[in-house]
Length: 224
Image 1 (cartoon, rainbow, N blue to C red):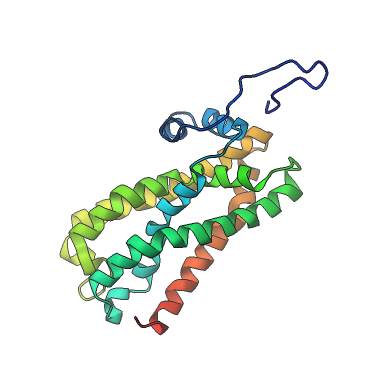
Image 2: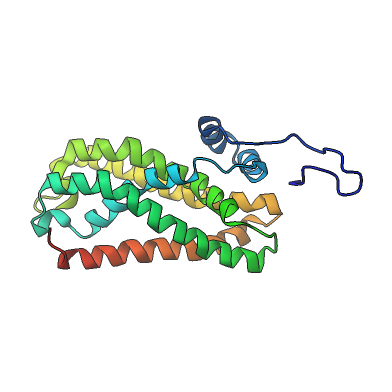
């Protein structure tokens, strides 16, 4: 299914996919995840992977700041906004590639498919594309509507504007759940059943939750 040429005669058995088109790949993930992941697996250049990691980073950092209640720790909103805009992409570029290495280590010992770093990175980057949309569309709306109250309990955002707060928070939750369902679809390329794929990606989610929780616990000890 992934081979470009027939091993016996050397003839081409499928079309080459030299590069990925970012927007058609993202639309494909929405429209037909199985076909999109197959095309991603066949592509020779797994381009835009680290761009997607950088775009997913601000949402991860916003979750950390919200969980740490950074607004109650004396941080001005301008500092938090600067952190999300500047440090968020860096967090994505550091945190997610490490998660890729962990996942690759697990998959190479279970799937037995000779997965390279760039294969697993592409699956994770595009599989987490709902988080990217939440990061570039939902998060700016949350920051604009709630300001410091998004990271505070005095008062909390759900008391200031309850309907917009829960609507936008629900969109974040949908993006996370959707990503959790998309990622296992990537391993269908290697004929791994969906249930087993979910189990294989659990360490990645555990790593991500552990890192964000750890940063949230450490934040009160840091002062800018």
